[in-house]
Length: 404
Image (cartoon, rainbow, N blue to C red):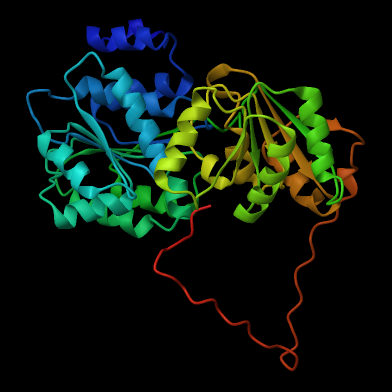
């Protein structure tokens, strides 16, 4: 199905044509008529499937431009995703008089409040900043017709579920709820059952856990030859644009220090950088001004890096979901991509799980490991009470979780 087959307003169709959006993706085709009809939806789809436009286009179509009030609320877990989301909404609505805006922490709340007072129809927000605005300003959600909860599983991972429930409870009037999530943990299912009314469930990930146009390469390394293996691969493959994932800020900074001496156009991004710096790096990467980005988990969720041709897991991902989200930064919207994952002998059990769960056809760089004989991990034995000494808990700071 094509966008021109839909009964969209001419100005929206013109903007979509400018963006070269022609064919609907499966998630868009499945959700559009139900979003427009006002039905609650739970949608589970692979990363890079076009979920943002699946919400943005019908929301823009439904906005009443004569009412200068927030009519659609989109809740996202991170500042970067808020900026990306509002950017796509702005592009689709650019020929209309609709005003979208994003509110998030790390930016002066006075400027955001002034923009809201001027009139905003579509609001994209992170939970913490939205709650600040609801408590300390005259922001009203009484005209919200559509509430979108995007990357719901990441909200859970970041400890935002109680904030999400507070915001949902502020929407005391009749409204539509759209819940999008790449995975569906039990806690998210419970949240949906509690707050959504007779939702339509759309699961496009059943038969395709990972994009089919993504090649999955795996290379066995050890701590001594890991960096050398990466440099050799980069020099041979010469990727157009690559994201290299590490599991920690310290590891990412160390790797970046090595790579910037050997490879040109190399930058690093993690949660320890200030917001303006992070935003600048994301924008430069999207504009192809940066060729290689060393990153932590911050860059693995929801963000659309259209031109990224390669994703490299320098450190082995923590679990199957982490692998899916990292590798989903390439091969988006039908494009081809390459994922290379380094693993050691102690990663073999988790590697086997990732390959089986995601139904991956692995391409081995070097010798193929014998995964058939990989034993299941033993359950840890209980410590003897005579020798057991409890660990001291670290003192918790003010923030819920430290950004990656």
